[in-house]
Amino acid sequence: MTELSKTTLEQAENEGKFIRKVRSFVKREGRLTKGQAAAIDKCWATMGLTHDMGLLNLAEVFGNNNDVVLEIGFGMGKSLVEMAKNNPDQNFIGIEVHKPGVGACLMDADAQGVTNLRVFEHDAIEILADCIADGSISTLQLFFPDPWHKKRHHKRRIVQLEFAESLRKKLKIGGVFHMATDWENYAEHMLEVMSQAPGYENVSADKTYVPRPEHRPLTKFEQRGHRLGHGVWDLMFKRVQ
Ligand SMILES: C[S@@+](CC[C@H](N)C(=O)[O-])C[C@H]1O[C@@H](n2cnc3c(N)ncnc32)[C@H](O)[C@@H]1O
Image 1: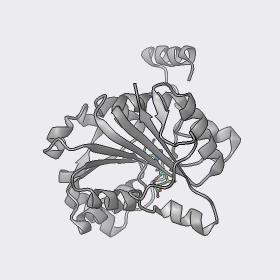
Image 2: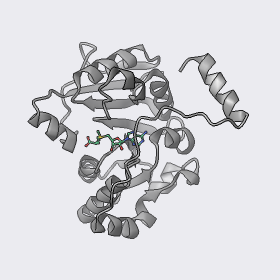
Image 3: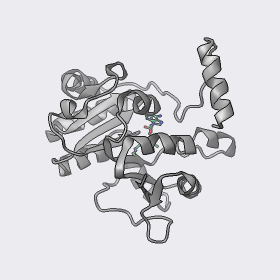
Image 4: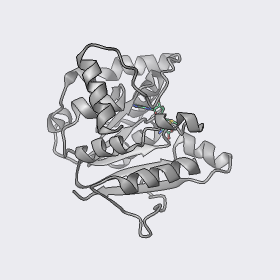
């Protein structure tokens, strides 16, 4: 968004006008399975976070000062839970708008005995703006975001310059924004946007993509991509300023 259109949007909002913002998702209500609903009932009090909690004190939330990894759009949460389980000395926050995904993630976390994970069921853009302190996150993860294939929908892609800037502020200096996609055109878009975004350095030796890091478990969408013969592109950008 340009400075001018941002000002116009803010002005309109201040005047109480309703402006429809472009969102990176379409809310599919979907049905919760019994298991997902039960997991939400059982685990929400210990693992659920809400937008109305406002700015979080992460040391209080987790009861320690460990590094925090934040994942945007975790889907059913399988890889997030696996990462949390494999890295008990780190804290994990997942943000997902799809309630059955949140339920599935909590069900899995409960079954695996994971305690270093908290989740939001909300738009990540709003959570980042209102609940996450600047300079507080070690790693931001965005795995297989909705690719919005059609050109006229590209504005819905979550990776945009403004998004990159809002994420950079949340990262510690030296913290990494890690993206992965199985859609080549989105990978190119990510590379183009992130290479222009100020304050980041591409971790890749040749300033393009990085090999798939071992610590990133296979996600459902990646497995699907493999079946369809898609490639997978990982990108890592470090906050340097
Ligand atoms: C294609 S799926 C990938 C899920 C998962 N990362 C995986 O690899 O299996 C993208 C997910 O991002 C979620 N999503 C999209 N925009 C979001 C936003 N602004 N805030 C939170 N979740 C979002 C969608 O609901 C969807 O579950």
